[in-house]
Image (cartoon, rainbow, N blue to C red):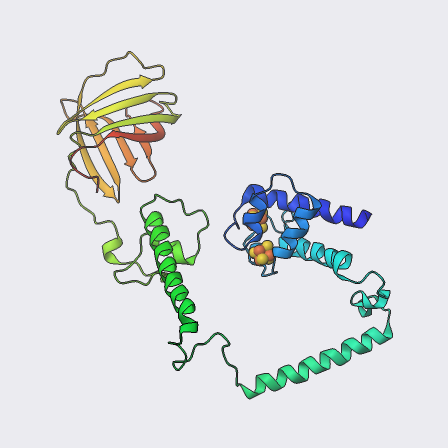
Length: 335
Ligand code: SF4
Ligand code: SF4
């Protein structure tokens, strides 16, 4: 009993780490079921162990697998729980000890060893015959002669529904990742090209090629971008401007910065001229100038990641960084 307690305690420890991490939640039924529990009882752990089919995908994906000190190995611990639960509930209680498991491993039960050997030989003989004939058939295949029988109608309908659902989910996930509406938290080969925008025209729904299309590369241009109508809040969390939020209101050629949060609130800054240049997909390089065209402030804004880097010359620590919020957009879309 003590051994079972130790086993469940260890399973509980590992699964609690999984429940916090959730990286593997799309891999199998274990993780969605695990997420429905905040406290794991022995019965929950046994249920989870029996949902695991030992594919080991989570183990290979896990950043906390040994030799990490967390030592997370769900397939290993769940298979031990399964074995214990079979011993507890599936084996007849009065079965002789030598029939309760692979006793030959423990050096006991010559009869069991012999029986296991005969069974293994039979499996090898039958299995090899099957393999060497190379006459395997797909038990799920539908022949053209039987495809239109009424009995098969649900199968065909369900197949069409599944195809649609598969395509639709690829469309939703793909377009979400591509447009950064969806964080690619469990990145896999099917999503890489969406995330790094290296999809080529006519690429399949699950692109794996790393080929970079020329049209997907940022096109270099020195054309100015007209930010007329844009209102952007820049909130600084690093560097010289830490703690300040400035609201920047742009016209066709000027910008007005107003402190709306932090120590500078109440300070009035003169309007500045500006030049904005697109330097990548949804990224602008913006220079503020005084009336003599001297540079007052330089910003690099990323409108996908919503970050801002700010360099204001004239001080010993001119750098600041933070996040931006687009309060109002103008008629021009940021390229
Ligand atoms: S197996 Fe590892 S990566 Fe997967 S959910 Fe558990 S802790 Fe996270
Ligand atoms: S080894 Fe088990 S828990 Fe891990 S992904 Fe496969 S089925 Fe799920």
